[in-house]
Image 1 (cartoon, rainbow, N blue to C red):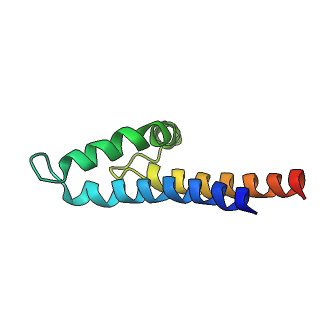
Image 2: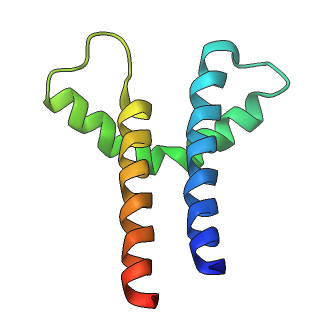
Length: 92
């Protein structure tokens, strides 16, 4: 049961980091006091968002709004469900 909780918390943390980056991108500009936090979030989440961004560009969904966070959140939700179900099959 602890392993299920740990896996779920891991995915939730990543989801919150992506959401935080997306929201901060609307308001934070270079020179702001919290800009270093924003750049740290970018460094942490970019390895997850870049493949999603390439996928959306390849599919022609690059109409001025970056929807890679939405794609990443959807993918993380699916991966979380798969990981939990696999753990149930293996451990129970």
